[in-house]
Length: 216
Ligand code: C5P
Image (tube, rainbow, N blue to C red; front, side, top):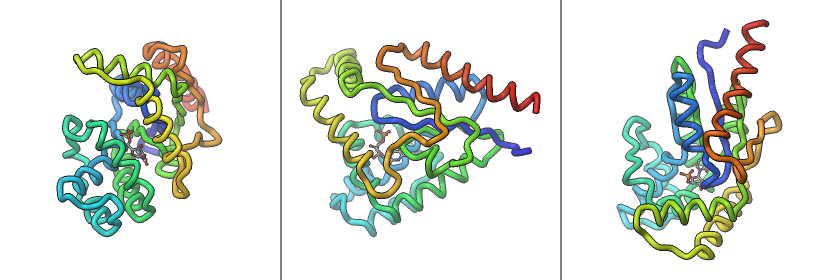
């Protein structure tokens, strides 16, 4: 029997997969990896060294230096870093380096919840559970605007929406590991669903798999 348990969560930016991943990792006592941070760390290193984002060999070096235990969310969560991350994420060699680290993480007992764009399709194709979390671009833009306003900022809804649509196109349209649901993923559309409801729905799916496994 496999000693680790893997939950793969994929979906576009702003669909709520990060919060869901955290809740599930807490509940099932699994390790947690937000794989977006690994691509962000590569982009951030290039920005820090004033290197262009299409410098593949510099991006590969930065990818090799990514230490999963030292990903600083506070620094990496900036919007511009996310945009830049989606540009370095198109390079297959960069992806291969990061995917290897992500797979090692997933294999560490007792297992992990990983969230990203290609977890169910590429990183952990044999994951015990695959969830694809999505929401309409308008709902995601509205959530992002509310988030910015809740910390006293201001932003333009149309610009945020355009940003989200552009990032979706880049992530879904790239040749290597495009964002798409794995054929065996459970779809969770959070457009009309609060995060608590999404968490309960995900738990029902996971508990069902665990119960069937116990019976087998
Ligand atoms: O999820 P987050 O916004 O942090 O991801 C930033 C970017 O990193 C994404 O837009 C995507 O291009 C890239 N990414 C990826 N594969 C993953 C996670 C993130 O290509 N597994």
